[in-house]
Image (cartoon, rainbow, N blue to C red; front, side):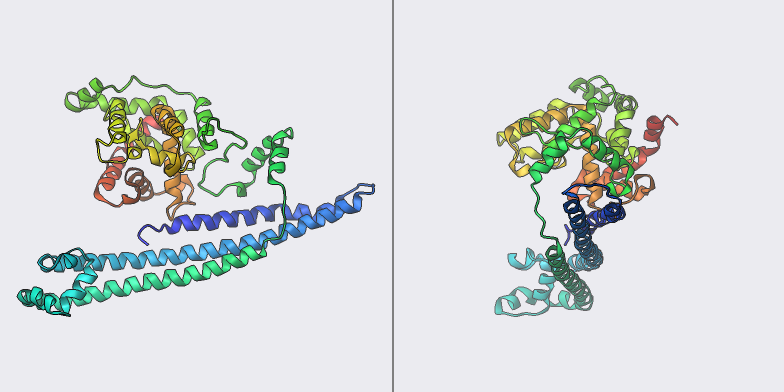
Length: 450
């Protein structure tokens, strides 16, 4: 449950609900179309029957997707309740750990390595001769904390029990409702390869899809950025998302400040810290268009992306990244090579792989090389960072919030998630978020020129 993100489940439900609303936008035209049909031929009746079939299909799809959407949204609400109970349980569990740690550290290895609840279960009752021997010398201390420890124990245990029961009941309901939604899907089969070929080869269809996506508000969830480009094919094992990203970078203007080489890094760190500050701001100033376009594209505030540029620019020179990668690939560092951060935005290979549509556990050497090449390109690195931040936002309870309406706390949380990933609540990531917040005013002055 610690790793569960109710917001991610909620956005899946919202996405299915978006499909329901999208179907509803076309139903009026679909229903009225047969009456408007003026076609005199032997195939006219067949055409009307097919239109009737299409209307029936749309209604059945709407019902199935509506049921599935409601199931996921209900499950997301239950997960949010369970997470709140988990916080209560964790707080009591942590207090119990601090209360009994001095006693527990005198016990056997099994007890020392157990969770606080198990430790207290062992300490409060002597269940064997070995327990009595280990605990005899500490009975006074155990009795002194017994009342408080029991209270914390039951508080944590009850909270965790509520977590388990809430999630389990909601999951069972969700699975049953999703199965019913699947059962209601119409038994309709089409040649998807043929459909793709028709769409790609019919003049103007891709343009029409793009235009409709811009006009119809249901084509994309709020806060998710612009509609992506359709029909982009990657080459040499490069994913469509990756290839699309490259093309977007080429379509925007911007400049690359002077390289941040080892000499610059040493000078900025030990001689003149203002030098690094100037370098950071130069990156934002010369790439305002790219930052703002990428932020819009991926549904995040431009000041968030600019703030991350400020945090990451400078620091270690690029050559240090490649040296670390070489050492890890040759087993000299003890860390996974794909945990190596590259480029202006300090993005790890496995994080970039996920953002670019690859399976990080199964990327080829060629794909890994292409990913690193893009991370080493500072301007591509900025766009990849926008995608990473967008993915992080999707995993929160504010996934559907319009970027223009996001609060400072939400911006700081995304900055922490960018730095710490699943450990975003820990001190290092929270410190990163604090630094991000401290620089926001200056970053906005440079980004917007006011």
